[in-house]
Structure formats: C-alpha cells, structure tokens
Image (cartoon, rainbow, N blue to C red):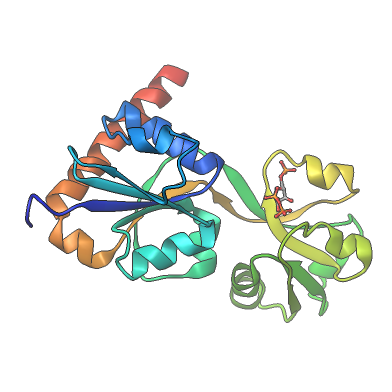
Length: 222
Ligand code: PRP
C-alpha cells in the first residue's frame, strides 16, 4: 500500500485514551497535537508519521472501525462484545481490567440457581442476552438501562443486573454482590478487515512494537 496513506485511530474518550497515548509514546507513536487541552480540534494529525487520531464515545469506536472511517480502534472488550461489529481484535492492551458480572442482592442467587424467569437490567443487553439465552439456557426479561445500573434491583426494576465490576465498591456500598462472572475485560485494539489487507505490514509492525512494550512492562512488574 502507498506509503502516503494515513493510518487513522479512533480512541475511546477518557481514561482509556490517556492510558493508550502513554503506551503509544513508549512505543514511539506520538500525537503532540492531542496534548493541547485548549484545542477544539476533533481530528489530530502527526504529519511525520502519517497518523491521524480522534476521540469517540466507546460504543461508537467499533462503528468507525467497521466502516473504515478509522483503520484502528482502542476500546474496552465489553463494548466489542456488545456492539458485535465486523472488526478484527488484534491486541490486548492489558489496562482497563475489570469483569462483566451478574450482580444483585445475595437472595437473588437462588433465582439464578433455579433458572427462574427473572428481570435483568443492563447497559449491555446483548451481552446479557447471550449469557442467559445461549450459555445458561435461562429465559429472562432484559431491560436496557443507560447508567447507574445498580439502581435496578434497589428500585425494584429488576432482580439482577449485568454490569462491569472493577473494584466492587459500588456493589458493596449498595448491598449488592457478584453472583456470577460472565467474562474478564480489558482494553483491546481492533482493526478494520480491509485496512488489515491493505496495510498489513505497517499494522503488524505497530502491533509488534506495542506488544513488545507491554511484555517489557509486565516483566518489570514481576
Ligand atoms: C461502572 C459500572 C459500575 C461501576 C463499577 O459505572 O457500571 O457502576 O463503574 O466500578 P467499581 O466496581 O469500581 O465500583 P460508571 O462509573 O462507568 O458509570 P455508570 O454507572 O453511569 O455507567
């Protein structure tokens, strides 16, 4: 592919983007423009390295990558599973570690055990549906929420929730607990399948460089 083509990255706004940019710098990928917090720019360019970057809301990142508006995306595995887009997942960045769990008051454990038809509220209806219908073969009613999901059982909207647990403190402070673990999560790099064909060498070199840095870091932590 032409050396002049820009590679475009869609990064998830917030903490994930900051951690991503720190790792990228260690691997020699720079975007000085992005550090200027006063800037109103939406797309940041590194002319020298022929790279472009933009920030997007998590659930929009796989959309940009699937349609090829971004070649590469950095996003949580929760979002990848929920959005189920046609993208390649090429690298686990190791940060943003947490778990997707079924949570609720301790008494809801019995309802799960006996496969009762319960109500499940979640920001992740597709993950919840896949878990209960395809893995557990349990019929449930799924209720989509947009945030503060722990409120579901507290307000009597649902018996349990499917949500992210990081430190567990939100659950503890609200008298809820992890009842079942669905999967582990962390930040991942995703790639548009056509970009992967067109720019295979460049993308693979980038992934190899990042993987090496991550391995060095994990050795240092041992
Ligand atoms: C997430 C998640 C939990 C909380 C878990 O919510 O939905 O509520 O963090 O973290 P903890 O285990 O460390 O307490 P977020 O802060 O993203 O906001 P939201 O509730 O509006 O989705």
